[in-house]
Image (cartoon, rainbow over the protein chains, first blue to last red):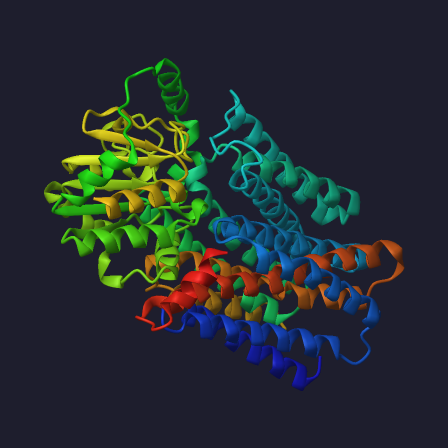
Length: 459
Length: 106
């Protein structure tokens, strides 16, 4: 490759470092993303203009085709569905990286060195796991399948056996330099990716997406080694390293070790136990209408709002703000308590409420909010469940045990706005729903909030 | 490039990757993940290179699929990240809160 091309690749690598740097500060995040996109576009254009590149138009058609698939999907997706969008894009990237190495192997397999062949095997395994694993996370988040951990007795032995099988085939591929063995290894790894993600509970899925993201990064780096392309090595490694760290940070924000996220479901039948409890549950709940709750809120001194995924689904962020404004107009002190993983991705609620122009001072992070609940008269939980479930604090066997929660049960009254008594995304029953100081207000979050707004105005 | 050179690059990239995001706040976890996701779409460069050298229908087909998937990863990744970050700009008190309200209500 000529020096100008290598220089352009160097600029791209620099852009990517600056992009990651920018993305980690709120002020420069958007610039960071633009810089990254610029760098990527530069590298692609320079590569397309390479002297002697074959099948140029064929490649350009493929690029246009890919962009036509991705851009409308990315532009039109609802804010609530963004995590699964990220999962899909990550999966296809992993698949692409595996295909690149495999194709290179098919083309040159007689002349390959052992080191390069090992890198090919690495991309075939890790890229395939990332691809099929991401597709399962997509299915879970899109609710094409249950968000609960799926556990088959003995599953861990099957998974281990398949992992060993894929590894064995991979090791055999290197000296034999055999394409069929490599393909078999890749196919087995696809199965492995599925089995790897199935036992992960719904609430933990974002952490897994982040981990698979790091996997894809490493796959790209290994492909870079196979192709002797420094840009791919640098970019892939950057993502691999930052993705690993990010996975740890996310797991930490949920108060769980990363091994607990991945393998937690294998330890004992805790999930099964909580399901049985739901089945026995015809415990009494107390529900009330808009007027009663409006009175409760309007005459309170201090009200906390706990938003969750239900608020996002119903697009009720503007309505909740209207209600809060009304209450403040009546002299009620109101704050929003934001759990770091409320919704389906970290920061989901901040994004949503920012869209409705909720003043930043009204938002309290978990550590700041928790001491406030003892002096709060009414806590309104809008479409959240797992993040306020006391089982995380009290019930040692529970799958979410140890996750820090908002201690809303310390408030004098709790109002739950829910569509039904169905458990939250993690599939765990919430004892707080049946607590004597809890009132339920059934319905879609937006409808319910509109009714509340009308009722408070009528007072 | 020789293996030691590549290993050096790999090692330094690991450190840079850790360093640049070590102080990220919780609210940016998802956009950052998404941005990093878009960055590994650079595998498109690799996909272009192998397709350019492809011989025969099998290699061309594999290359075509790789280019399509890699493009989806890269382009989709950057677009979706931008959409997430768009939401952060309304943090300051803006005079046009009505406009925002209408825009968000659709």
